[in-house]
Length: 349
Ligand code: TLP
Image 1 (cartoon, helix red, strand yellow):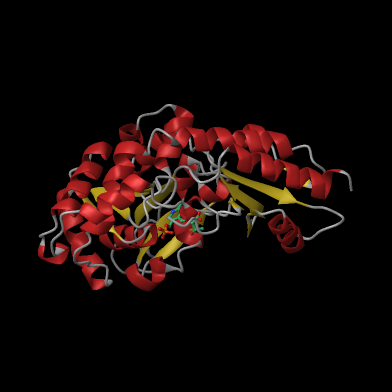
Image 2: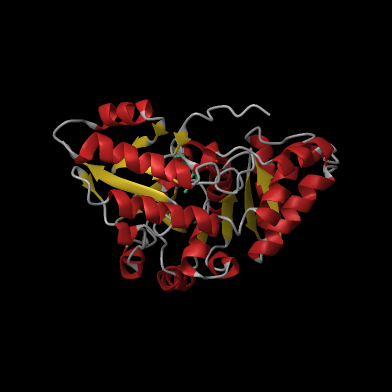
């Protein structure tokens, strides 16, 4: 099997992970049927597994995390509604405004402490019924929190937000794209987090290393409706068991190893934090995402990323500076290579 991009240490995202040999074998051997007609046993198995792992009634396999989030928001809201979101949330900032485009609702972004919204502020921002203003119907939370450098949002905070939602009869949708990274970091079982959301989505195609797909889980009637929305968005897929099969391998075999990714991110962060030009507190690296501020007399961010690439190290520019993400396809040698490149490019200047 050719290893495309093997010459690079690719820290751009955990979405770059390639499927394992076992996943490829599972794809080749998958029993499939037309999933739109309800005939694909492999997809059904994956959806049932996901629902069981999260302690929910039902699951839906969708092509992407973005589609899962957009379907959930559509499912829990009506036009003219408003959704409370954390201001750096992925589904608010990086999903091409599906909230307004598909669900036709408006976001109400709130500030936070590393992804943890203040429950009192959440409550203050719930709209009072009035003909002039939208109706608040949904709160969205995210954990681990991508744009807060993979921060783990404390369970107690999420419970307080959930309590506010219950008091006001609102729904909660949980973007758990990297929920298992959060579980490793906090030691909290995934079902405890999943209880916070009426619905939850998580990604197979990130650290879990499956090639495609995410799962949306929640109550049976909500998932039935979500299946219709998925179809309307063009996300009904036919013999898609070939894609679900590696997802099953991912759930069986790839969750435990995510701890390694969290540990490697800590090692990288600690090694580079004191290098001139880097603004980073390694104590704040909870999971597999490192976002650091960059302010160096010699380079602007794009030039520095180009220099890193010359050292075969790939990373991305992001709003907060530069992002490195650890995953299955970057091992200890890649971390060493990155540290060496940082030292060579920045330390002696
Ligand atoms: N995140 C991707 C990019 O979109 C930036 C990444 O490389 O981190 N929720 C969260 C928290 C995410 O980080 C992502 C993807 C999504 C949702 C969307 O998932 P996909 O890419 O499958 O649509």
